[in-house]
Amino acid sequence: MRRRAPVVAAVVVAMSMGGCATTAVPAAPAPPPGPGAGSGSGAFNPTDIAWLQLTVPMTENAVTAAHLAADHAASTAVRSAASALEPAQDGFLTRLRAARDRAGLPTGNVHSGHQMPGMITEADLVGLRTSHGGDFDQRLVALLRAHSKQIVVLAKGEQTAGADPATQALARDLATAATREAEVLDRTS
Image (cartoon, rainbow, N blue to C red; front, side, top):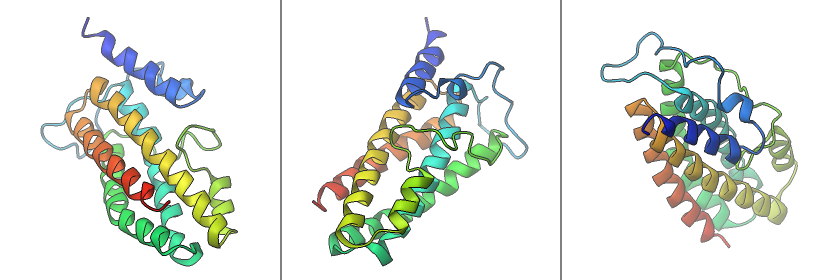
């Protein structure tokens, strides 16, 4: 019965990604950890791989979006919330990229152009870059809220069915931070 957990989590991840199941459930086994894998790291399974391939670009785009608030936001509360989120997101991005590298995954975004819940897309970033004031504030807060909620959903799947203990711990930490971020964003309304 324990063997079913990765399959169940991969299906949950695929469903939460809104139609991007082909990347979430690789046909081939996950690659072994790449060079420089730390001691105590486990083997990466398809859930670990899918989670990293999605969470890294999601976080990269969220960081980019939050950085825009300093010059585009009208509300002091929105600027303050984005500023408060940035250090944690930057730190998580560093950890996520290190986990991706440890797994031996490519740095490119395999989800580029895909429409998925919680993913701030290139089109969203263009929209944020060209808006200011109240319109920017509404867009940014809505995008970051959706991002935070989806990060929690995806992190639960990784914690349940991932195989690499360090990646599971990272998912737990990221979910905790995303829950706090959602609370901060809720106070901007």
